[in-house]
Image 1 (tube, rainbow, N blue to C red):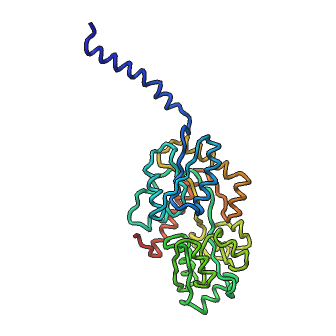
Image 2: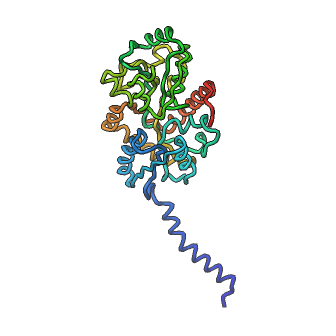
Image 3: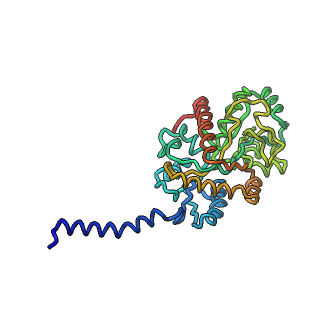
Amino acid sequence: MLTTHFVRALTLATTLAALLPAAALAQDAPYPAKPVRMVVPYPAGGATDFIARTIGERLSKSLGQAIVVDNKPGAAGGLGAGEVARAKADGYTLLLTITDTQINNTALFKSLPYDPQKDFAFITQVVRSPALVSVNAETPVKSMQDLKQLVASRKGKLSYASWGIGGLGHLAGESLNRELQADMVHSPQRGEGPVVTDLLSKTVDIGLSSVASAKQHVQAGKLTPLAVLGRERSTALPQVPTLRELGFADPLFDTNVWIAVLAPAKTPAPIVKRLADEIRAIVATPELAAQYTERGFEVMNTTPEQFAASYRAEFGVITRRMRDFGVEAQ
């Protein structure tokens, strides 16, 4: 007669034997085995949404699974970024965001629901969006030299607009303000559209927006571009010099707003590599690269290693300037 101990052991062994094939099958299932969610921490219809959907449509074909773009706006992008930071690190939840959630927000908010330096794995920076310094075309200012002369005659009487407090436009505008000793008043807006509107209506003297938002008005002769941020000129406006070319030395002027893809920290390296390889191949296609350039973006298409290196360098430059300029946490 079988003892109770033996029966229990036999039952346990039988149960484990039944579970082993299923466990092995789950472990051997190739990635991805189900749809992938790409969280965009900004509203639908913006630049991040556009990039996410153009990539998602093509990525779904190359991976053989649906890519679900999920817009989660709120808290200056912090709501969606925090959700991805807390997600399971299995490659099925991704973040497509801009520089602000990963750098600027650390100085803008006293507390964040995520740590941008520790909670994410770098996949790739897709594009950068060069910032543009421009004025209304009806003004006599046609170059940065003209602006210097205008500042000399109207010190303390000029204003500049940016897309929001603590954003790159604000920081670059304030750095320019100090280098020119212009004593300009900052007019923060909620987005780039209002900046361009203010320029067109002459509500402000100088505006900092993206090339993408101002390009059509430059081409129509309504805005005069003076300079772009970044180490290289904009492909969309190649005639416009960089601030660096014009002799402005602040390292901040070498930076740009980028749009990138990240995953939760501890996502397995093979999955990160697979995603990076697939997305970079998509972005490198002439059709999509041309589409991005036409919109005023510059293709970056970095490797995870390149992304990590540039992120760490920019983090120090941007947060230091935010402290220097007295941008206070909310």
